[in-house]
Length: 168
Image (cartoon, rainbow, N blue to C red):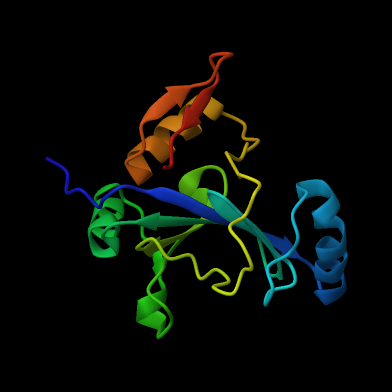
């Protein structure tokens, strides 16, 4: 029987930008798109009920996902033949980094616990909810089943019969 790493929960999406000017443009454009103001201390981060979206100068987009036991999740990934980059081994915050090659869709930063590194000074609870993300992939059925195996998520179907995952 597989070791349980705990429930896996989506927390946020980091959108990669080429440079700081692109991040500033996103910070100016996103309020009109999302109908929500940026968080107080992070100008290009937008908090929602159920997650956040943040623009950063980075190499690639990444999903931020949380689990109950990072060490158990690491062992689970090893059993599946996936060698995730471990931030703790590099002297950074404990985080497993899965590349898009490993997930079949997008890079994923996997961390332990419920915290999201969010803005504790946010004036009020966000009034807009982030209910899901749609990933464009070549083989949605295969990627959905692969993610279900990677992240202990139940494979589901939407109203049109398309695959989806419930990342709590």
